[in-house]
Length: 195
Image (cartoon, helix red, strand yellow):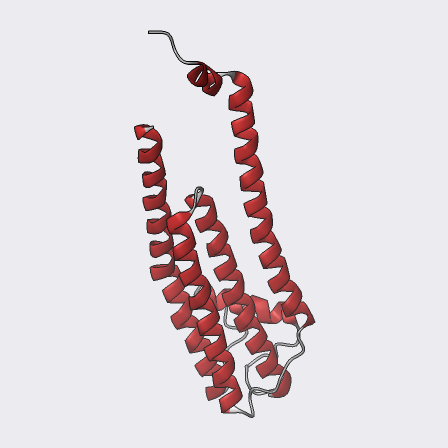
């Protein structure tokens, strides 16, 4: 039985090239969107002025709560998005990068603000935003080089909250996002096999 013209069209090199170009275009748009989100986070971090959270436990609590809820809101959106995504692995990687950026920069901002208004918040002053990002990364990576450490209870509470959220991101976050990505990729593979 001869193949129908529709099947011939699907297998021609021009159609395959068009399909590949469409796929690359979609991936490029997704990566650009993710990079834009990260650039916006870095821009906000660079422009943000420190606020005095060391003298106000309520303000510090509100900022930590905002950081936690922002993280979990993005995480929830990520899981929903991955369950519907046509490119779940790419979307999973992009969303993890956004979560890491939010976590690192959010805590770097808290560290910078604490150190700016309280010289005793850390054993070594976090005098620049780069130093704040450095301390946030060493806390996330659990390396803890030792030249900067929390110097009072307020700073210790903030660092402990980052450690808890870091463990959550690394453990639960990566597992759930990778599981959702893998499941969606399998669904898409089964759907294309049945067609």
